Image (cartoon, rainbow, N blue to C red; front, side, top):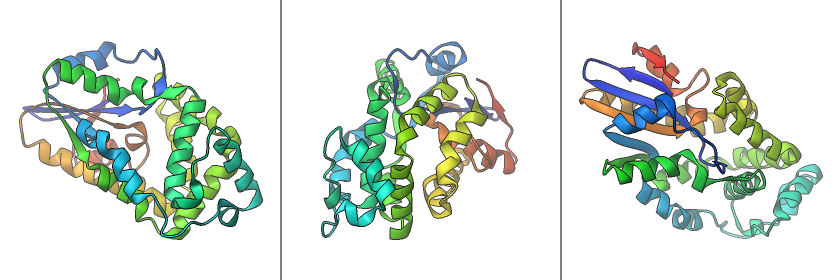
Length: 259
């Protein structure tokens, strides 16, 4: 968790895990104090947008015409895809590459025993609702998913192929990421998160860098209003050279890691 502040505004940036193992105890110490003191919560998606994200996905995900996965993926990648799909058919032949990638990620999280119900956003939403404090979102579900939908076809295929080829170690990687997050190891977290996406520059720009730039701009605007805000976004957006804290520091703000 990082803090950017001026005379009358504090914005805490909490790197979240969208899904976690049951019983993960993170809402304590400084984090718990911020949760209690913040006037409002800012997430990637508001609870209302998150609730409608499935419908948006089902609208955007279908291909204009089916294409068999066997025609999309080379043998090693296809074998990896089939291993993940063994838990239940994705209907991947009828979906865009990015949508198959999203479903694969969800399946891997399930296999790693991570669930959104135990994730940071779910518990923060419950806490702020109980306290009667406002909860907003930086993006709409449409905007977030269009980030993937508008990736060029070759970038989508490369991301899907790499994920399928590396599927054998995916569960271990997800568990390692959750463990690094739990102990606050930002270097290990950045390495795990960035290892694949760094090899696909167009994807990194769209999924990470451009969104970080927009969120940094939101923070600089919000700094003009007094109050205390807790902004919780995926931890990958807060670690690395193009992370939100790094962007704010480059703009002259004093950013401090507080947890």
